Image (cartoon, rainbow, N blue to C red; front, side, top):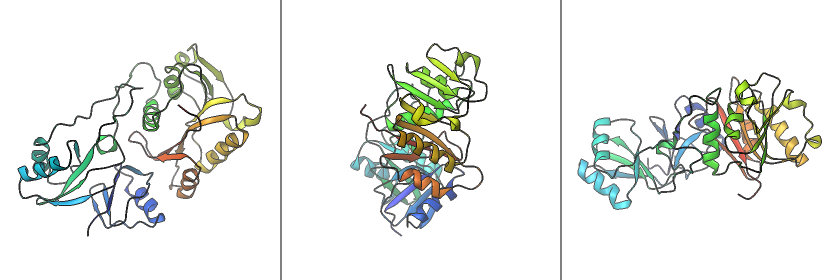
Length: 306
């Protein structure tokens, strides 16, 4: 078996990735830890934290020869250590160091070229000079704020905005649907934009008191988009079935009252792959499972210039 692509799942979400690939006509030939190996060319996979787009099998005669082979291709490599940890660590130590430094949001994602490798056996390595994520094993880390936000939900928002490389700023207006207790509203307010937070539940008082935050105590689904002021961004972390969220997003798109969208698809029980595919089919859509997501996907749609 010669892999032509490899997909790295988040722990606990291997089944979601396997089903997504099956629906795309991609068979998994083998699993190596959380890494799904396929003999088919790479395809977009929302449930993969990272996709290796050019994997190559290479012999490992010694620690030195393995490191030399990798350095002969390029400088920067990230290790996925699924097995043979001691030997892999020795090879990694012989390579130029690549550190997973925590980002200070809104610091942009790294732009340096980064490949990935793993040991399939003590004498056999799989290495891909290219992969879809600029982060080690697809996982971005942030310098967290443990005092300002009322919840840690802001981390998945930071990750989504970092991945799409765009976020609202001064002069822009955003609508945050399902805002309580205010983790996303807090994060957006820090960017200097005007935030309208919508939720029937109570907002955190400190967030509600921010000067650039307005609170609307009502249901996000009760809003009639065509009767609302236009906003630059629509955000949603609403707890609802994905099919209902899809209807909400389509209504706002059809009304032309929001240009950019960042929404969480929250799966309750079984994963609704059909609705996820419908989100992915929206022209220009980005759909992905981030390192800070649980049983959910992020939907992002940018329809204006940076």
